[in-house]
Each structure stands twice: as C-alpha cells, then as structure tokens.
Image (tube, rainbow, N blue to C red; front, side, top):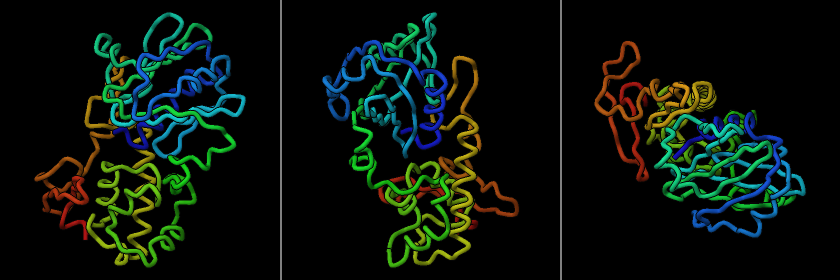
Length: 289
C-alpha cells in the first residue's frame, strides 16, 4: 500500500499535470471498487474546473467549483496515469511501471480533460475508492474526521505527543500506526523511525522518556521529508519511463533486513523480525531499547 510519501508524490505530479483542467467527460469501465462509484455524483463534475489538489493522510482531495470535492484513496494497488494531447502516457509516481497491455484491463475510470488530455484511475485489486463530498461537509466525512495531525505539520510536536499518551497503555509502534494519533504513517516508515529514534517497537508508551518523544518526532519529519524528496518508496520497482527512480528503499536501515548487520557504527547487532499486531516489525535489539 502506498504510504504518505508516495501519495504526496502523486499529489505533486497531479498538480503539475492537471490542476486547472476542465472535466469534459467521464468513462466508467468498472464501478466496483472498495465502495461502488456513484455514477450520478461522478457525472456532476463534468464541465467543472479542477481548482486544487491536496492530500490528507493517504487520501487525495480534488477540489472543483460548485462545492464539490472528489476523495480518492489508492488502496493497495491504485494509481493514476496521465495522457497528454500527443497521446503520450505518463506515470504520476514511481511505484509502478507502465505496461500498456496489462494496464488497460485494470483502467477503472477515465477522466477526459480539456486540451485533449486524460487522467486514468487504474486499480488491479480494487481496494481503492472514489467518493464525492461537499466542501462544506468535508470535516464530517467518515474517512477524514478522526485523523490526527499530519506528521510534517507543526501540530505534531512534543506537547501534543506528551499530552496524547498520558494515561494510555499501548506499544509505541501501535501508537505511531494509529491514524487517530498521527495521520499517514505506515509500517515501513514506522520501523525506520523507531530505529533511528533508538526505541524498540514493543516499548510501552508510558515508559517513553522526553528524549524518546523528541527523537521520534524529529526522525518522523526527517525520514518522511527525505522519502518525499527521493520520490517515495516501495518494495516494488519505482522505475519511471524517464529512468528516474523513487529510491528511498535503497536507504532502508531495518525494514526487510532480518538477519543483516546493524548499519550503525560500533554496533555488532543483527536485525531481528517479530510480528506485532499482525504486522512485521524489524529492529536492532542493541540499538533500540
């Protein structure tokens, strides 16, 4: 599943390619995504201008005039392709390849844009979804209303963290994975954040020191920023048609490295893997306490 950095990269790509475009027509090849697409609502964006694209957690928000917002979650395998007026196909991120024949059968929705351009929503496993909301009711939406602060936002700070964990009992990793606490973090990046913070995934939050908290916040922001700058990451190949790669996976320190030597100097520990809340956790038992 794409995590925050990948979705942020998609957002920035879409802003560059389609912001201010007008929706000329929409073709639905398959409406059976995680939630069935409401065809009547989808038709309402025809003729409207796409004014703004933002990201909230792992969701993309497309703002049109007339108070309409299209909410998109990419699920496990959702992705966008862009086709320009010369019929050249482009990716909007690096976590997939363009494979013309394989792609076409999974093209679920095609948006025909002004200037003879197209935006294609493609989803192999159909765990993603497309919903339509009113801008005025955005904060009441089920998928958005309970989200915690964005990890790169100033609201995700020491005082917020300290107050949130007071009188709560859970592991540090589960806390960081909780979208109500902080939005957008996923399993890959939480493993990396805890490694650099020197905190074991199983550590109870009531035992976190002030130094632990400050390190977690610092490395959350540092690692996500670096991943976004490098184009996001995934276990799969990020090669784009131009040969560029989203290469943060080349910098993983613990994720997927069971049995390998810890990369930190003066540490002769080996990375171990455990299952915590049905998810794989990787850490160095000597560096993380």
